[in-house]
Length: 62
Image 1 (cartoon, rainbow, N blue to C red):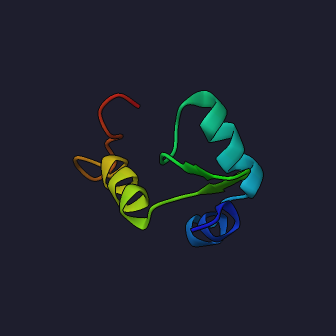
Image 2 (cartoon, rainbow, N blue to C red):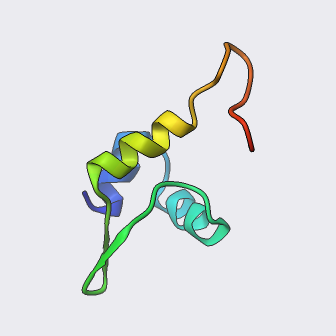
């Protein structure tokens, strides 16, 4: 998926996704030419890693 599609899917601005990349956060991307693309499986894996271990408790390492 494109960065614009990911932005829409996550309901976050494209700028936030670029900021996460610079900070080493967010899902991994693939360069296709000059474009960034995201594997849906990587997005799902990243989302799973963000899941709370218990309600109200941040995931480990955050």
